[in-house]
Each structure stands twice: as structure tokens, then as C-alpha cells.
Amino acid sequence: MSKFRNLLIGTTLVTLAASPVMAEKLGLGRAALPEEVAAWNLDVSPDGTGLPEGSGSVLDGEEVFADNCAICHGDFAEGVDNWPKLAGGMDTLNHKDPLKTVGSYWPYLSTAFDYVHRSMPFGSAQTMSADDTYAIVAYILYSNDLVDEDFVLSKDNFLEVEMPNADGFIVDDREEAEKHFWTEPCMENCKPEPVKITMKAAVLDVTPDEED
Picture 1 (cartoon, rainbow, N blue to C red):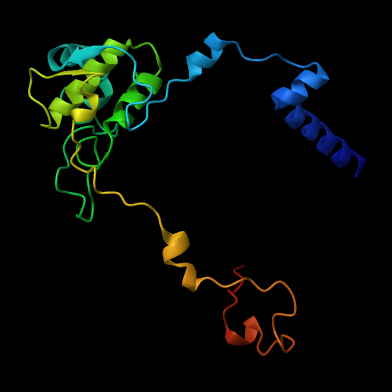
Picture 2 (picture 1 turned 45 degrees about the horizontal axis):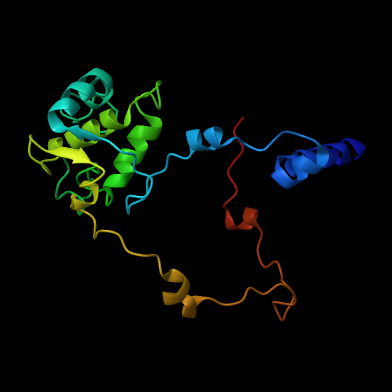
């Protein structure tokens, strides 16, 4: 019991120390520097918040994609072996086995930019410049027949790109729409009569036979 208690206390102290306020009180760690925060603050929102300055063309993206992405995703973003397909799948979402790609499924282009900029290429994440990321995303759009080959993607025209499945998602309103199905769970004295055992598993012949 004492070992469990010591472990619990130790875990609690570590958790509290992770809090900036408690860390200061306990004399542990320091506040993150602005440049350290900036290194992790890379998220891009559907409304364009977080997009860096820069631009990239389809033609440039074809070269960057070939050098950094094609080994897994194919020269035309069609996917290699079991690596994800980034293009294709149009009009398959109502099929039994839909092909969900950037072009057929993703509602926001910001998801593609955010993921490439933050996590790609595999094994060398965050080595791409903003211009290269814009170019790669432009090439992915082109591979999905969503832009022409002379298209240049930038922060200025990013929100002008219309994704085919932008209206394919709905807000989860079950909290209100299905509220009439819910009942407060019973926590005590829930059954008026005591529970009685009426049959045993052996009698019902649901117990597996033991094999020698």
C-alpha cells in the first residue's frame, strides 16, 4: 500500500510541476521563450489564420513533390502500395468502399497545408519552406483536377479554392437533437425486486466443453 501511495504522490507532484504556475512555485523549469512557442505554433485554420507569407506554383510543386513525396504517394499523388492516395476518388463517397483523398473528401484546404507543413515529408518533418509547401499543395490540387497547370497558390488566394466536399460535413447536434432519448442513469435502488438467478449456464448449455 505504501508503494502505491508513494507512486500516487510522485505522479501528482510531476503533474503539478508541469503547470507553469506550480513550476514557478516549486522552482522547476522556466517559461517557454517566444521563439520556442513559435516553433510549435504552426497550425493553420480553415479561415486562413496561421498561413505564412509565400506562394508556390503547380509546376514548382511537381518538382518538389517528385523529390520529397512521390516515393510514398506516387508521381501523380495516386499512392504507392499502402501509402495514402492523395488524389482521385471523386464521386465515391457514397460507395461501399469510398476513396477518401484530399480532392474527394477533405472539406478544407487548410488541412492539407497544415499537415504538409507540420508533418511532411515522412522522417524529415518541418524541413519544407513555406513556398515549397504552397507548391506541393498546389500540385495536389492539380492532381485532383481542381486547378489548372499554371495555377499559383498563395496566402492571398488560398481561401478562393473551393473543395468539392466542403458541404459534406454537418455540425454534430446530437446533444440537442437526440436529447429526448436521454434519461438520467439510476445510481441506487434501481430495481424494485431483488435479482434472482433463474438458470445456470451449464443448464442452458452455453458453457464450452473442456477439451482434453
